[in-house]
Length: 346
Image (cartoon, rainbow, N blue to C red):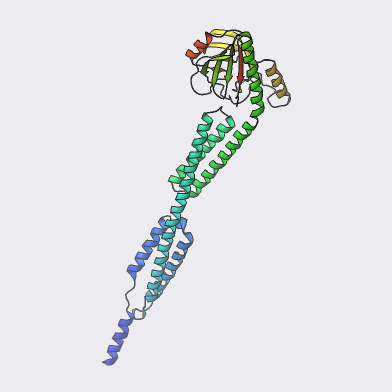
């Protein structure tokens, strides 16, 4: 009888209940971690949890392979608990890292959004520089890509697009600074042209026109005194001196009205004597130096005409006023009126 009781006691001691519920919870937590962002943000911690869970599975299988009398699950349960703890640690680490990455990417995109907006405002207040416009457009596209990737939480790609945007804005800044560095000589020449034009207007009492491309203004003088100013549109490449036909640049220099056209396709027009001798000299020098194509022409038909008032630079190189302003200007000027066009005066 004593032997039987001892055998029963020994059997009961070996018949431990397998920790299946704990195993299921741990496997579910691990599966949830795999399906979410844990692998992306805490891959090493997740690998450690996976490895520990595999050891726990092997221990469970090892115990299940024994006769029920000899099964002991305490070690397996410990391994399962350890694997589960590692999974939760990985999940917590991933949550914290994801939050930091999102904050960093969001801050970068927000900063770049302000930078891109600021550049747009600055460029809208000055002449269009086509290299700068191209770089700004590329920066805007990179920024939009970064925003889209941020919404998708592809943060690595979002930051890569943000870096492209920052590099394009840096190139934009260099382009503008380089352009501005060359401006002083042109400003000095422009001031001289304007001074000569106004001196002549004062001496003769004649009307004179000064077009300031940077201001997008046509100023009308009488006897050297400013009497009217009109908003004007310019050539689509207005930030540059005109070099050849089709370049979209509004020429800079001293001209005069060579013909009055009351029936222009652009309402009314004042034809200028472009190209003048200085334009022809510059064109020949640039062609000889290879700066423009040998097939390029110097261009003609530069006018002050109507159909302006569009608040954008769209002409092929002409100066465009609104029809009402053009009609008003025509009351004051005619053939022979001096017209000086400058890029900027300060």
